[in-house]
Length: 137
Image (cartoon, rainbow, N blue to C red; front, side):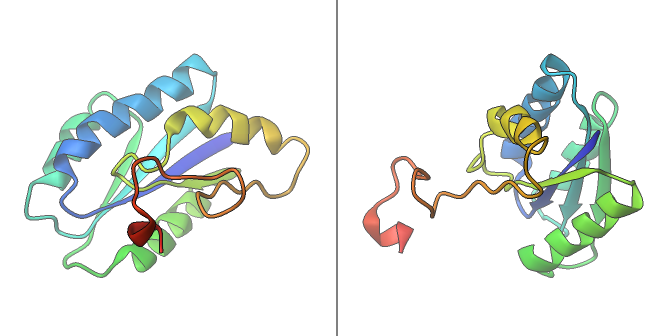
């Protein structure tokens, strides 16, 4: 199965330097045929430039958008690209490590028995460590 991880970015240079190698390591350790699709909304901090450097070592598709169009449309752009690449499984992940890449293999395995697998911090068993009640609302 081919797996794509869609990651929208805006000013995520520091986070993306750690996230991409971590996801790629999870792919490698678990025999997952995967790629990363990064959609950057013209980050002024050099996020796209950092991703271009990482492309030399990791399976990344970078989509650079000319202006900040928002996370929702970035995900849609990434999903469309994943479908163009004939991906069997598509993940969405934020660049700020709010989604743990270590769960990817568990989700892939679960898809052998289910049509849809959902992970959410907003359902029973899901949580966000160190978030105040105010931020959760």
